[in-house]
Image (tube, rainbow, N blue to C red; front, side, top):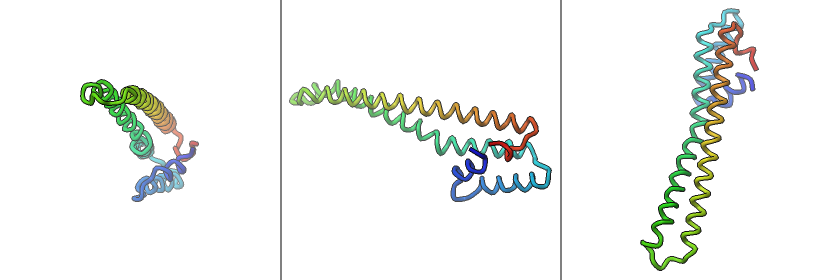
Length: 139
């Protein structure tokens, strides 16, 4: 994915990232790309990617964990709080707890994997900029 397509996908309605990218393209066209501004742009782009694409997975994992723990608490509390409850109620709640905790583990795995990928992407782009290449030439 190119910088331009990543910027277009992550940019919000304000167009702040697109304006910054246009400024970098203008500087590159004049032959004087500023490495510090390029690094700032890449860091901003990475920050937006984390906020829009990665943090929701952490929230999903937290929510699934809370639901799983609530179902576990319900499993232990059903016989005492509701003596006339069907026998299947505890088994159903236990199954739901297992499902929610499994979803929490999946959400945490996706979050950690995406977060690691984003850090690798940022490190690669910063290294390329420090090596003297522009981010506009990178894929």
